[in-house]
Amino acid sequence: MKRCRIALLPGDGIGPEVVAAARTVLNAAGFEADYPAGRVGWACWCESGDALPPETIETLRGCDAALFGAITSKPADEAEAELAPTLRGTGRRYTSPIVRLRQLFELHTALRPCRAIPGNPLNLRDDIDLVVFRENTEGLYGGIEWHPLPEPLARQMADPDTGHPAKMRRWFDAGLESVAVSTRIMSRAGCERICRAAFGYARDHHRRRVTLLEKPNVLRETGGLMTRAFRDVARQYPGIEAAEANMDVACMHLVTDPTRFDVIVAENMFGDIASDLAAGLVGGLGFAPSSNIGDDFAVFEPTHGSAPDLAGQDRANPVAMILSAAMMLRWLGETPKADAIESAVADAVAAGEIQTRDVAGPAGRGTTTGTAALIAQRL
Ligand code: NAI
Ligand code: MG
Figure: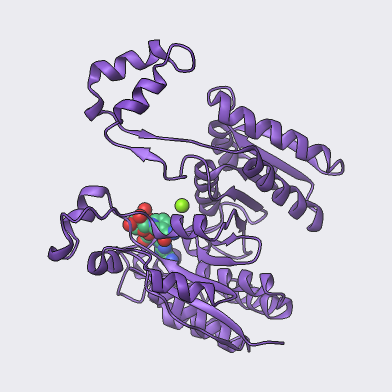
């Protein structure tokens, strides 16, 4: 088998710490690879005015997959203020590098398993085993936004034939410079693709039900498009139950009755919310792996962000990143090594060896490095 090239994008905050932990475990599992590193994230933005510089994109193009730690993102005014002085006022605009990566490499499917590892004291219940499929390139996180609302666009939206003149009046009255717009653009192809990914996974993994989380009663056009795509795809999988739930009530049911869900599918933002919520049922962000999968490239990252409150203290839980690395091995076809890592994590959890602060509270003595070493020893 050819030696793999895995790009390492450690990023900001706890990103570098958890990526180093994942490397320790991958080495212990006997996975041989080259790991070219790429710069990405907030520090990179501040220094160079680009949070995903071209040389990082080049590195990624030469790799089989990537491990992404986490990045810090801040609002637009802070992005400008923290730029290197020579770059300020040069019209650079910060865009989230992970969102760009997903769009640039067409990483259309975010697969986020939320499975309770037995013995984890943070589990709401031990019988939760959900998988969230989140559309990763369109929807409310598609990045098509304006502030202020441009006049030609406002006029188009107020057009008596194709727009909403009565509804637009209040925004004209408010003054367009005080109005911001983020769009939720979804395509039939994008909706079908994520639904097919969810149903295909359900079939291959003997799952009983796929539930669409949407809000078509309010988001009538985009929600309606997604719902129709879901129903059409569902018809091609007669053995799998297809269920639909409104996003808001689904949040309540995820907490009160999580076993009613099995595979969940949703557009970008709803999937983001559902996966963090589901992560909270099974140990929190320290235990939640995720993947961004395209047709021939994939980026694996924990669901969590850069956790500035923990950064630099060697106190973050590396399990989410380690399980993301195991997902990468599975995607690369290295199934026995993926299984071995997941078993080692499950055994370490059951033995009470995960003692990072998220698990053990303020008294938690477990370090990121120590936890990785304990898991590596079990390999
Ligand atoms: P966060 O996920 O970084 O942290 C939320 C809470 O969970 C914090 O209390 C943190 O201490 C805890 N936490 C997160 N990861 C943990 C781990 N491995 N072990 C133990 N505890 C952990 O989310 P937050 O605070 O909303 O955002 C912080 C920064 O991260 C922001 O700049 C945000 O934009 C960015 N972010 C980046 C993401 C990415 O890289 N894909 C995803 C989410 C947020
Ligand atoms: Mg999130």
